[in-house]
Image (tube, rainbow, N blue to C red):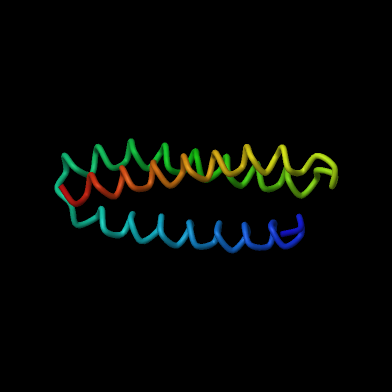
Length: 95
């Protein structure tokens, strides 16, 4: 996949992450106060990773063809970390 197609796919993924995060926040409103407190702390980490992913994507857009692979590897690491944070946050609501 070339860089342009990769960036477009990533933009779509970011929109999907925003939708998932919003849905999770809506579900949290139904939880008890103790769970909501833990949820808020976890959501702060989710938002931090989401923003880091956005920043890496912007960096990728500015990177030249010869070095975009290096940035892509970093971006994919952040994406995995976002997924893990999201899954842990979601799990705190279902316990």
